[in-house]
Length: 377
Image (cartoon, rainbow, N blue to C red; front, side, top):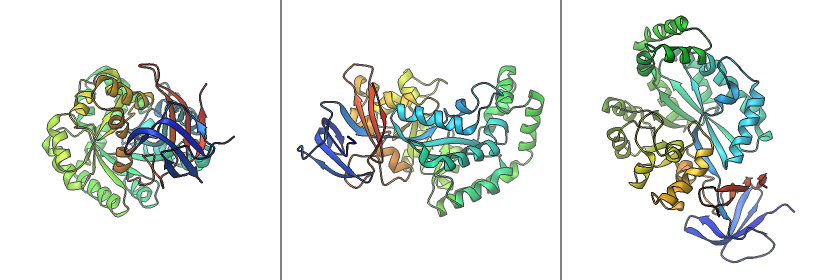
């Protein structure tokens, strides 16, 4: 039968993990009852939890271009990404699509094409897919079309990035120059020319960012800063009205973001690996100290599913607290009022998890808007 109700002795509700029966109708949770009432799928002691909401994931890039210069059709890449998301419990995905002056994989053309393909495939996909548009500060040729995308509802979250200082520094390393050039689908000399061409318009950057921020606010679109490091970065982020601070690079920037009521976003891979891959702050330590609001998959989808269990096992947070980082907290930061918790009136985005084996939780089933989209072994 197709279940419209499920019961478990361990349901993760806003009031904690407890026995309950969850009923849904037309994709929306109708009731969460303390007692078993009527026919329901009996999940025993498996954990029933809200679907994960990933505010920043860019692992899809490896489906588009798994090797430098080797591209695959967008519908193929998106379908495979969708399967990976659902298999890792991510029922709502904000794809971190980079719109950069670099060209190639992170060009406006590739990003817009990906967003258009997502919209076209729509209901054929299992997860709900949204666009997290990462606008690189010097991408001035893409300003007008990005403004149009904000106005027509194509973008659900706008991040204002500026990787130019790091790129200028790193292209002096032959290996990094080659890496950037390959991603941009060009050669090293041409990539250097693109850097110089972008820098020549530096005086236009400030006005462009202010126009983007104003448009995002006008249309109710969540606005994020990225890789804030200095107090000058934070002053700009505050002035632009950002409400999300992605991956602050030190505690000074992080604390300023919290003081300004911006949600601090950290990477789940950092938790799973036991530290940052680039020598940054420990996400687990910051979570233990209550300094993180949202966890995201960043570059590795499985990390978002496994990180809450790792945090709970280490004592850095309770499972309820850790799960909220990628469910209710993520929903609030992303402006999603219809999901993120198991509660009446919200979407029936549900995960059934077998976490009986230490260090190896397994997704048993997943529902998106009440439709069962995944069933494990």
